[in-house]
Length: 184
Image (cartoon, rainbow, N blue to C red; front, side, top):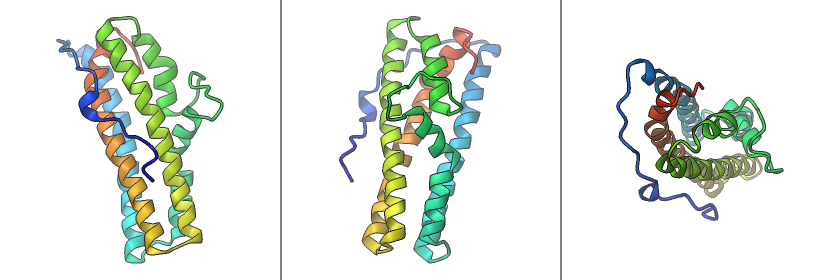
């Protein structure tokens, strides 16, 4: 389960301070709204796991929800095994990797370091999503307490990184979107 190394938040590049006009804050707010949709999906998955624990939701229902959830599909498309990270797709991180990050790269050295770190975190998020889907699938075949615990742990690891990642991304590149007039 711990074969996927989650980056340490304390090693993230420092966020430069930026003064923005009200209009320049709009792309940052838009990014937060998009991320909030994904946060709701994570909370919904946590609720379903709790439902399985209480016996209100079956392991099959949990797996179907995780497998077909738009957030998982978005990251699956983003991180396809062929490594085509820059193709235009409908997934959130794919859009960031293919459009937003390239538009920000080269603006300044501090921002370049942040963008590189966010790209690296996208890869880890994708691996954790694949891990969660796999654990949920195993739970259908082996509805034991130990497999349930493995599924919960996979979700918790994903949620911890993803929620932290979203906040860092909003705070680090959110202001740059408005400053450099990069639409999302």
